[in-house]
Length: 157
Image 1 (cartoon, rainbow, N blue to C red):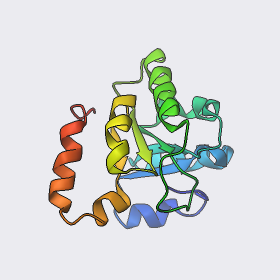
Image 2: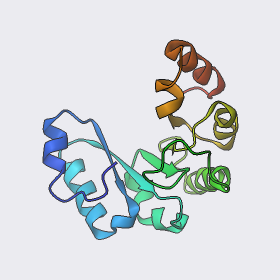
Image 3: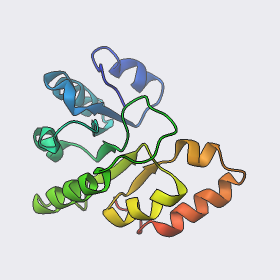
């Protein structure tokens, strides 16, 4: 996830990134970064902060492979999923379906990924979960990963 994309495309590509996600809140800078990434054949994603309106995604949806929705405030660690996060996932899934993009664009949830939220996140339509502390705080990372995968629908594109 890149919040200030200017000048960072080259180092990310040189480091081997095959997908880079930028924040919709960056506006024109996000478009410029996505264009630069596309020219370099790097897959693109668009992220949206918890407090930003879903409508900010509109100009980006047709060009990205993933939409990342924050489920907690950026930079806040160890907190539960925010109220309304599941509904945002459902709304974005419906928007993608309405635009004929749901088979091509995945929905990713980041923040508040806990044992008790994984099932609800998958049920709401999250294709990808950023597991962070759920995985790294686990006594059995392989078992935790297998459990999460068992709850997800079959992988999309």
